[in-house]
Length: 245
Length: 55
Image 1 (cartoon, rainbow over the protein chains, first blue to last red):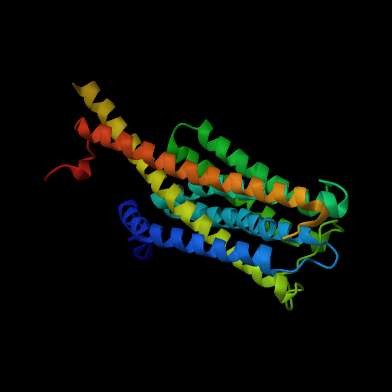
Image 2 (spheres, rainbow over the protein chains, first blue to last red):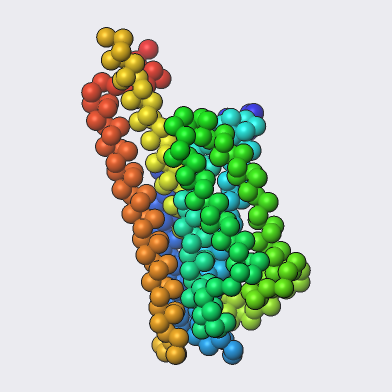
């Protein structure tokens, strides 16, 4: 347990205060570079034309939607095994962010699909498993709101998160296991990426920008949740004092 | 910059993403302000955690 001892909420707050200005500045710079690359440097795709520019937000949205659940799964272990208070905070605050980026992935995918596939939506394995991920995020957020005791809510959410993690490999390999309208993996695959560097570089810069944005928002949301728990503790103390008087 | 015949789809995708990102930024900023204010109000009324009491 020595290795997680420094991860107490007060130390986390101090660290977040120091890191946030740098992360926010790095996010802004990465977005400036990424959007310039996406709109003024990247060429049009020979088949998809300018719609390939939707990929620069669609793919990072998908990546962060899955990253959110991955972080939550690790945090869920921290909640269930070590009962670490910061793990519970990390689990709870990643859910709205993961849901938001999964939503971005789904909607930008639909807006890309309409001109390229002729339809906004098909019930193929990739699209459906990402929709399931989005619904699981919403279910988890609802679960937290439904249980009043934060410790009980945290344990129930952690168990559900670990069960839901089974969907992550299904999303990743759905395009290999089933015949889907969605294209196969072109970045994270065995062998080199199949995207030309002229389009790959803007995509990677945008993915970096979105990841930095996620980290910045995540630190902010965790800081807010720690403060919310302090408020709850103070209110309980106030109520106890009022009862004792 | 010419976005071709599907410009509306590209614009809609980027507009929606911008709206979601702005919404998330506002959410964390307003929530932070609200929690800070509530904490300050409680502390001003003399409510403090046991760990913060003078020993």
